[in-house]
Length: 318
Ligand SMILES: Cc1ncc(C[n+]2csc(CCOP(=O)(O)OP(=O)(O)O)c2C)c(N)n1
Image: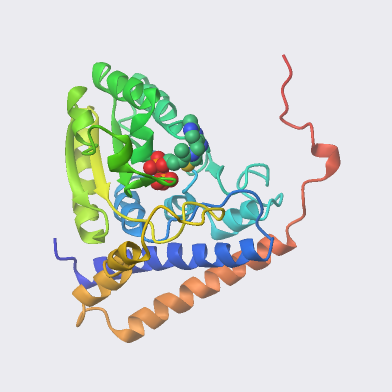
C-alpha cells in the first residue's frame, strides 16, 4: 500500500508522538522521576501506529508492559500517561500502577500487564462478553513472541477458536524475550504457525513498515468484525533499546542492532514518502509532539502523590 499524503502524515505523527514520549521517559528514568520497571517500545512503533487507528471506540485493547505507545495511540491523554509514569494521583491508574499498568476503562484500554501472556485470557473474556451482548466489538490483544511459550497462549487461542470469538491476536515478534533469542527457545520459531494448530487464520507482516501494518490490520479487523471469528497477525519487528532499563544487552551484537536501525520505521516512512512529506511537515509534527510532552510532564510534576489516608482505598479483604 502506498499511503496518501494525509495518511502518511497521520502515520508519521503517531510514530513520532510515541518515540518522543518514550525518549522523555528514558530521560526521566535516569533522573529518578520514573521508578520501578520501564520497557521502551522504540523501534516497534509502526505496529501500534498501524493497528490502533483501525479500531473503533467501542472495540477493546489489551497490551503488555511495553504499552505506553499503545495507550497514547488509543487516545489516553499524554498527561494521564506521564502522571502514571511518575506515580502521581493524576495518572490513569491513579499512580498505583506505574509504567506497566496503564488502564482506562473509558478508552476500553485494559492494560498494561506485567506478567507475560496475562493479557491473553483477559482478551478472551472481553470478546466473550461482546459476543454474548451482541455488540460487534473486536478485541485486539498485543503480546510478544515470548508469550507464545506460555500455556495461556494456547488456552486463549483454543477458546477463541472453539467459541468463535472476535479477537485479533497481534504478536509483536521482536526476536528476543528478554535476553533469550527466539531460535534458542522455540522449536517452531514461526509463531503464526501456532495459530493454525488452533484453526485460526493468520498473516505475517513487516512490523517495521507502518503502511504494511496499516493495510494488514485494517483488513484483519474488518474480517474479525464480519465473521466474528479470531485472526492472528504476526508483526516482525525489532526493539532498538534494551529489554528494560536494567538490561546490559549482552545477548546481541551492536552490529545487529545497527543493521535493524537502518530499517527504523520513522525514517523509512519519511524516505519512502519523500516529495509528499516535506521538511516543514516533519518540523510541525515534531513541534506538536514536543509541546504535548512538555505539557504532560508539567501536569505530572504538579500532580500530587496519593494521600496516605487513601492507601486502603480499593483494597479488598475476603
Ligand atoms: C509469566 C512470566 N514469566 C517471566 C516473566 C519475566 N519476563 C518479563 S518480560 C519477559 C520477556 C517476554 O518477551 P516477549 O513476550 O517476547 O515480549 P518483549 O519483552 O520482547 O516485548 C520475561 C521472560 C514475566 N514477567 N512473566
